[in-house]
Structures are given as C-alpha cells and as structure tokens.
Length: 425
Image (cartoon, rainbow, N blue to C red; front, side, top):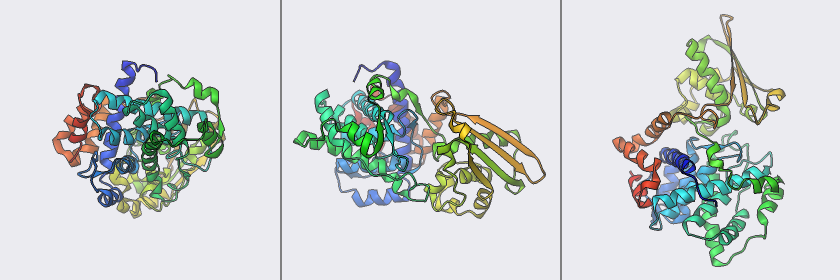
C-alpha cells in the first residue's frame, strides 16, 4: 500500500470512531447479547461487551454487532460497507498483540482499501447482498497488515480469503431475515482465518480474486478498474448515517423531514404518500415489515415511523415499534415506485421524489438529490460526535467523551490496547 497521507488518516479516524459507535450500539441488541453469552469462552476482550472470546469468534461477534443496528458506514464506489469488514477483524487481531494505535488505524485503512478495490471492480450478482462477499478480502488485508506481512504474503492470504466468502441473499433483510446481520461477522472471521491458513501453508486459487468475484459470486470483473483503484483512497468516498436504517431509505426520509419542518403533519391527516426513486431504492417497498430488520429496509415503514414516533433511531425499529398499529396503518398508505429516468441519472445523482397528499386536499412535494452524509454532503463532525454519544452513553455514561477522543485520534495512542480496554463496559 502507498504511504497514507495525513488527511486520509484523519478521515479514517472518523470512520473508526463511527464504526466503534455502531459496534457498541449493536451489542445492546438481544440477538447479539445471546450470541456473545454463548461464545464468551475466554480469549481476547470484545469491544463494547464485558466478555472475551477466541480471536476468530471475537471478529465474528464484532462484525455482527457492528451491523445489527444498521448504523455502520458504506461506500457507493465499493458497492457496500467496507469499514465493518475491515475494522472488526482488525480489532480482534489488535487485541492479541502489543500494537500501537497508529498500526491499528493503518490496518483498518489497508483492509478498507483492499475490500473496496474488489467491490469496485466486480459486478455483484443481482440476487446477492454485498455484505460477506468481497469484504472477506478487506478482512484478510487488515489482519495481514497488523501481522506485518509483506505484499506477496498478503496477496497469498487474500487469494485464500477469496474462496471463503458467503452466498448471500439480497432479499433476506427485506423479508425479515436477520441472518443478513451475520454476513459481515462471518467475513471478518473468515478473513482472519484466511491469514492463519496462508501462514500455515494453505494456498488459494492462483489469481483467484477475479475468478471468484468475476465469475462465481459476481458476474463481471473489470481488471482496469481494479488496477486503477490502487491509491484511489476509497475511504475518502465513504458515506455515514444518522438513521438506524438502510441507506436507500434515507432519500425519502430527508424529503419527509423537510416537509415536516415546513409544517408538521399529524398521521391521521395523511391520505397517501408516493415515493418515486431509482431501482435499488424502489425495492425497499414493503408496507408491512415482518421483523425489525425488514422495517429498517422499508421506505414505507421508515417514513411512517418518522411521522408517528418522531424519529428513526434504534428504538424506532424495536419489535414493539414494528408492531405499532398506528405506524403500520400509515405505512400502508405509502407507495414506492421505480422511475427508470431516475435510475438513468445514477451514479452521478441519486434522486428521490416524495409526494405527500393530505385529507384536506393539500399536496406537498419534495425532491432530494443525494443524501446527507454522502461524500459530497458530509455530516458536520459535531453531528457524528453526537451520534457516537447516543450509541455509547447508555453503556458508558460520561466516559463517552474520552472514548470519542481515543477512537477519533487513534494515531495518538501508544498502544491500541488502551482503546480496547476503555471500550469495555
């Protein structure tokens, strides 16, 4: 990897802090607590939980927690969420060795870039979810960095990792399958395992990355794009979220936020809501989500819960909130439609149009291009710091400010273990 400029390291610190916030929040989810209790058999400390587990399981549990509340960052150019795939195994590996905060951050960047390059170069099959696929490459690269492997050894580890991705389903989350949250954890675990295997002499398929990601998990590979990705610094193109739901719901969310800011609307005053958007967002059209994760991947439910409950934070997607009669009744009035003309405007523009029709005959419209938190519309750091507080304060109280400073500027820490120890309840 090329020398990392200071501005890249600074932004990566923001990504690390944001991802740690998502991990800590995720550890409060019931399924994550249950899995942590089952597998807390000793080993390395888990960030965000008063437990420890063997390193591969620590990577798995951290990746699971980091996606459980749908708060982790993503990357359009990479085609998914590279940070959690790289950071989860990096934290588990860092806990096994006396490395500096600088080394931890370098590993996170190395993993982010390696995974994103593959995600950018491949064309994922339409039925597949990106989590757990090319992220295994980023996981292996992050661990290899912490182990000090040279370029050749790192390449061998990534070739092993290429065969350890998952057969994911893009519709699992839409239909209520929280197995989707497992994908990133499994990739983190398998990426760490890939480095172990490569160091033990297990070999991957020679030049297997374009084979697996271009022909098996994917259906196309652009070698020129892969080569051009070296030194692009995909991490600077990340998007960050303030809502506990899928990115593709958030154009409609911003539209309703702006309309409500102009004039509040009572749920009973709504006659209908119409959303027109690009193809991938239009798939999030379920009006009666079967489970919390399905609510997080539903434009009708996210818009409805914003109007009814006033927010789209973690509690808005609890089992009780998903079953709320008033929210479900309003969600039933939200129709989502694909507009091919808006799809044609991608990737330059991600457009969402929302029409709010009230029972008194009033019609209000709002068009959104892009989403707050996108690379060209970044959230103020103060907003991300407040997100960190909301994620961390419930378990750590006033210590959240210390944790923010450590996670935001890991380069200043002589030992990564200080961060890991501080992030235990």
